[in-house]
Image (cartoon, one colour):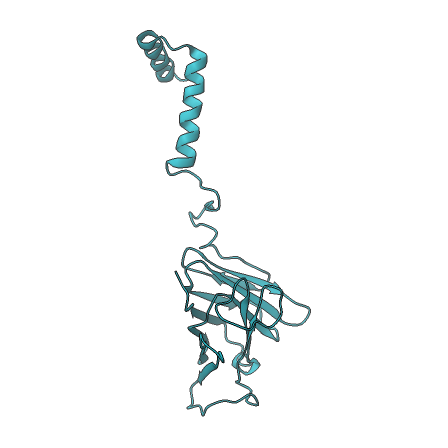
Length: 212
């Protein structure tokens, strides 16, 4: 106990008649209150040495770096025996992420799972190539797709190497029948042709129809 603290305890004891044990309990309570309610550490918002919360931290798997600049956005990488799964969770339903492949080449296939209720817009850019896609929020839940690159593109079809397959999946992993999705996700298979030039980064932007 420092001299200042001891003197403070003595003054409080004389002025209000509070015993030493009571003062200790009071001090401990004030410390705990300050930690949990006064700018200290909140559950689910722990900070690392860089001062960033888990939502802002790069979640790194071997051969990858990830950046989600907005609070409430997370991207998880799960390597598979063949290919990789990128899972996106977004509290606000609108955000972006950058995935960097630090060891070439990109695995195949790359499956993107967007845990959203609706897909108003998805933009993916990998080097000079990219695409924009959306799924209508009403039956028949039609997918709209536009692919762009260094050369003009004609509309793509399922036979094109740049075709983007999008599936609506429910919480059990089965095909979903309606939007908004409740606990499911949109599975987006990134076309291998988009990654054949081994771009270093892939940028992903998304907007949920039913965002907060």
